[in-house]
Amino acid sequence: MEKAGATEPISVSERALSVLDFVAISGRAGLMDVAQALQLPKATASRLCSNLEAQQWLSRDGTDRSFLPGPRLLRLSMAALKTDPRRELRHQILSELVTEIDETCNLTVLDGLKVRYLDRVETHWPLRTQLEAGSHVPLHATASGKMYIAMMAPEKRATVLRHAQFERFTPRTLTQPEELEAAAQKIRVDGYSFEEDEFMLGLIGLAVPITDERGECRATMALHAPSARMKFEAALAVLPALRRAAERVKPLLF
Image (cartoon, rainbow, N blue to C red; front, side, top):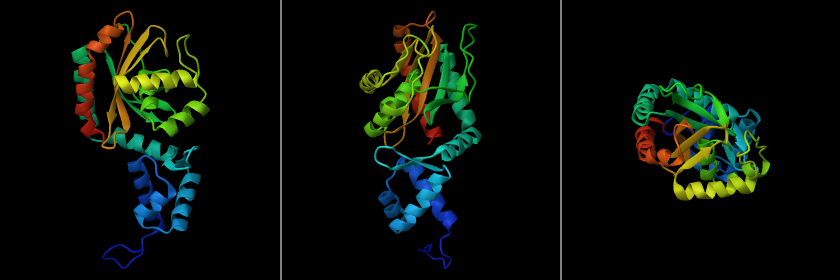
């Protein structure tokens, strides 16, 4: 295969980058999807994908064996987001949201089976949770994490719930697959995710999804507050502000 208007054949590295680009944009892709999209023989696509998987640039879904972004590709994407010049614009939106609702807010992304704080702005109140941008929090015990679970494709969610080991942080932490599946169903209906005393006693959280053009949850906008200061009804009252901030930050992510 040659580049249009060029005499030099496409190198292996260029093909590998094309595969990574396609899988990253698609979110997941089968071998034939890769071969057809990049106009590659099936054997060539298989060899490229296998090599990229061996180097952890790609990973395989345990259910349908489709290819997903691997740990190294995810780390690279996180690093790119951190150095993105739009970072300051995202931080400004987050700061304005904190000023509006007067509680700590987070912009999160999924990082493997954990949630990473891409950015975080603390409230001025002395009673608060000290977690830095870049910190990881559990997938199953936080509002953002449960949103990611809820928005996963059914096959991927089933695989995660069946095979992941979920630590119990408090008596209210959901650890059983059926509990998390029921929570995911409610989250999809409600359009938001709520936590109370599930990761830390005395802490509540509320999260809304930030989706791409394919409807996949690529990030969340979330708040955290001590339950002594904010109850469920008060959290729901600021839900519109959280959603407005999510819409504002969306073009600065994808």
